[in-house]
Length: 499
Ligand code: NAD
Image (cartoon, rainbow, N blue to C red; front, side, top):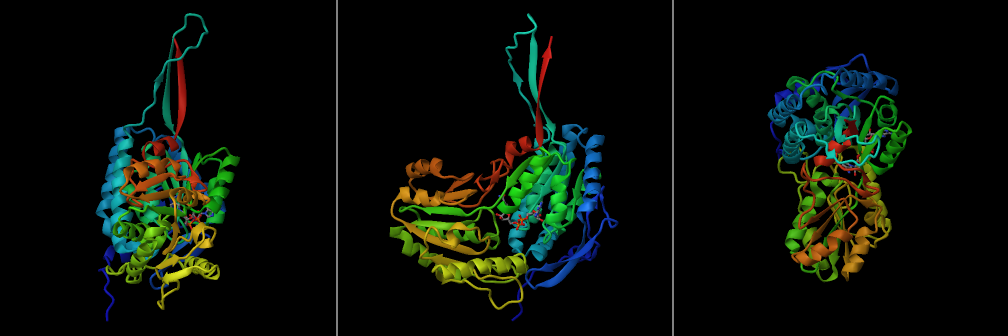
């Protein structure tokens, strides 16, 4: 039987055939190259194309390009409406090249073509337009002051927001295009210039959109892409004294190193880090909806989502029904390549990450977890892991405490709501959580008790450009999206005029 696959665009093959490397001053800088890195298609483990990586010694020229562009005022000196118009044109170009970008992402990252089209491109274009609009809405305040000296003087005091300067945007491999543009768009709306460092595994779509930004009218040097290893080029970028703001999305372990390195130069930083996100299912919840929410919110992108639901606390009276319904549906999911439109579970990003997920599943087995379905790699050439439901777990087990970042759903039960809240909060992370109930009073009572940056009720995982996003506890520092993003890419200046 032939495996169904979507038709691959000629422009995708043409892009893959190009020479890829660090993008600086509006061009691929072939002179900046230290080593060649092969990218593999996660569905087949075959080489997709190769890219040129730079070493830490080359980082200086990339940052200087962004710094020179910032200081020249070619971007920050435009009127807000000129910046807005160019950014809207950029969004139009990303939309017009949407299918090409979606296919590139699916081939590079492994995700479903449906997710690539709807989220990686579709939701990102919405976010781009929303952030473009902020360029014309950045504002300060006028403030009354009571300064006693000099006698009889009058004052006019106000605040203004000024672009932070050169931004280092460091992004992970799970949503490479979307998360890069979560940083590029507000930074550019504020008048900053930016260097994006994609994850080693997934640099392709951000390289493609950097060229589209030039086509839209973003001046060369404003949006640069640095290709290099995290521990070398990434670390050198964070430590560079001409970087004014670091916006990092990735693991908590690396995020801590990044924060400490940034602090050495007093560089501003925002950290969006890991999660181990709970779904709290109350006694009255609609179990069919909760199961659909668990699959949608837990297995999207194979669970490689910082906000994905991965711990499920179900009232004891509904536990058996929930586990049976979840297991039945998860065990029937079709596994296949992201380019196969019928496949519901796609490969993980890399062999390294597949090994890491399988290792955590071995730990779960050794600790006595019950495997209701899944638990191993299927006999396929790519980096697949079966969707897995774990039950009979204790709160202290690895599968309940650690971020697995894979297609693994851990289900526990509780007797009373106070215990449930304690278990929900008993984790080092605090990114997101969801409550499933038809009892509005109980939901309203629970929301303030949950230690998470986002709490959803009767859904899990939707985000909106206007709704701040970020973590409590070890899930990060600062917020992205909405006004918070604008605050993150600007400095606040107070002005006091005596007259
Ligand atoms: P990672 O921390 O390994 O890498 C993230 C980025 O940091 C990559 O570009 C990497 O090259 C770079 N990097 C590595 N070492 C560095 C260093 N010393 N200095 C500077 N940069 C360095 O994360 P990952 O494996 O790519 O992504 C998965 C993680 O990202 C998960 O923990 C997930 O929860 C998290 N994540 C968080 C959010 C959020 O918004 N909170 C969103 C997506 C992913």
